[in-house]
Length: 390
Ligand SMILES: [Zn+2]
Image (cartoon, rainbow, N blue to C red; front, side):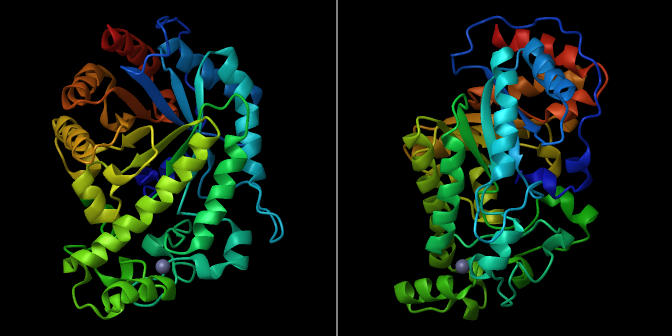
């Protein structure tokens, strides 16, 4: 998804509307333990003032949040490189700015990047061939999927994609004081949007339609054809061809596994934000996350209302993820991601309980900005975290 939230458009723009937190210290236990660790996603911007950094990190620390996953490369990078230098100077600047605050407030810092969804202009201009093509033969550079400017996706089959992303991950993983790298949008574009969003986005998706079905670029068609003798663009019902579905699951899993290997080779924690349940992830975005290798933590974004699901689905979906990891003999730690807008401050305990009962080792909240803009949420969260960690 992240993400799922970007398809909500305006939500990404709602940042830095600061409310106060009481600065009560809610949490003093050992942060090293993995069990019941509390994480939160937060958007980072070069333009943030020292006061804003101080505000978010101090409030998060007081509330008992152990780790912040800081967005440093999103859909609208603040610094655009030219076609001779692809170094992500914006992402590096944001992380280096945040590190002193993370140290000061004893918060573990992870760099959150969009992965196969890459919008940087220098890459688009110099390597248009790396971008995905739909079943109508249209490049995602030429159309605005879901009317979103940022829906520009790299093809996981092309070696150039993996090489480019490895370089971006490595330059961040080299930063001292950073605990890990967090891969978001490590998937195909939505073949089907989460069900609760169809109406607001004006789409009718009772099945997969070719406009939203990817990737049918020359490299993918030729690789699949070599393997099976079938040109996938000619398939009448591509989703019913299990080999073609598997080809795409494997392509994304391979990129994810290789990037996680790079992250870990730098001694950092590798993690990813993934769709809510293994079944929905494969169906909606061809993301077979239980098969990601070399990864330490998986954060299924169980933003249940976007799937038109009741609160109890947090437990069901968490359980499905835990079981899938077990079936695939993955050693990854699963941490349920909850959407603050779906967790009222009066019912935080209940939602945390659903995640715990499903087998989640911790909780991750989307997002700190969401907490900040809801009056009284910081204190309600701090108190809930104390009860959660008991
Ligand atoms: Zn392709």
